[in-house]
Image (cartoon, rainbow, N blue to C red):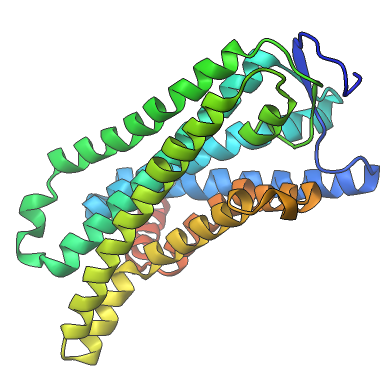
Length: 311
């Protein structure tokens, strides 16, 4: 379709990462391996948390929610790349593309909120341990999880509705490997000022900055409390309980900032695809690795389940 023409579009063509056959094969095998490991690793955490009574704590309850987000997000973002290679069909309907954008935005907002809830949980465990069990009860944890999932969905509904109202596009070629909000908006010939303003205010300020601020404030109090602990062993143990979460938070916010917070003049479409691929494919697999390799409770629960299954 001519880039200068304006017309009604019924389907999009997903450009993918590369048109070179050998590179496409390598990328497909790599993404397939990552997807299988992501699905298996996060599903293992969900099953461990559900089956092992010793993991029925607020921290692992939120970790279970985080794993569900990672499974859903990686499936939503990578299935087009995998299916298009197998079938040779890289087209997607406008409605399906819009739904994919909605799911991706909802899950991203929900994930940031879940990480903020996990930081609050760590704050209560370290800074207020005597009242931890009374405050972080099952009712509050369930309420926080519902709020995280609900707010992520509600914040993305206006974008979904506005995308449904877009009547024409300059082209139907989406220069990405999945339906992302920015590549699709660049193709729109409709008035997108509301979406730009909404993404800036709600997307950046509320959905990203507020959870980031809550996480930072929680860790400021956590660090101050840890520094007040006299024994080196006590400080090391306190920091160890939140090191995995801090690693995941740092990794996620760094990749999101590199991907979405760069000036347009510095954005290279090729590098942006690779950053997005890392964010949507590699980060979800790193979460279970970080929590399993750096967490004694997860490793102990895994050993208990293996012994139980063996016998």
